[in-house]
Length: 163
Image (tube, rainbow, N blue to C red):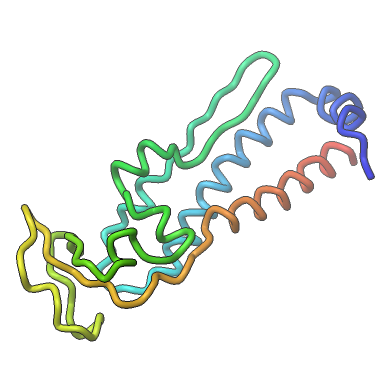
């Protein structure tokens, strides 16, 4: 029930520099929100923090545009290749077939007391251990939650510019 062109013409263009500032700050706020969301939901002790550190703000500003991105997929794939599995949940492709997969927790073998299996003492390549995941990872939905928070805060910015 709104006209996007009218919102841009009446509220955003009227105070373009304030809008740019608010959008820039919004990027920092959403990055912080996402990182805190993940950190507050870590279930295993001894987290390396790689997932949180892999998510960065990529700003871009021009004369007629302003924006940013959070979490460059190519960087996340390098620093925390499990980010997709943590966000959406499930099991890795190999684990779905009951096969062993190589992995470690910060270079350490899986803790059999936490996993309840006693598996994971065998070496698998350099620094990894054979692991046989038995249950799927519960989804964290940090991407979706951050998107909802972004929508909420954009509405707040528009209302602030309007009023």
